[in-house]
Image (cartoon, rainbow, N blue to C red):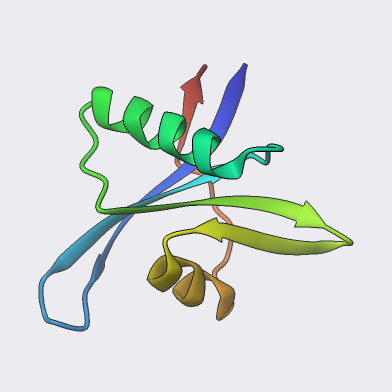
Length: 87
């Protein structure tokens, strides 16, 4: 199965950089799925500081994952997939 993923590097509020991954996926156990996808991205030589899942619920995009990343994404992040992961 192929999972869409956005891999993005943004400036942190502290002045450094944050690398994050957002995966287009949802599960009955989002914690486990997010961990599995994050580990898979890291095994593919991607540096991931924070990660989240993105999925449709009641016609809206919802996010699940790192609290700070979910807050950032919820402010109007435009979904644009940059990679796919095979799981």
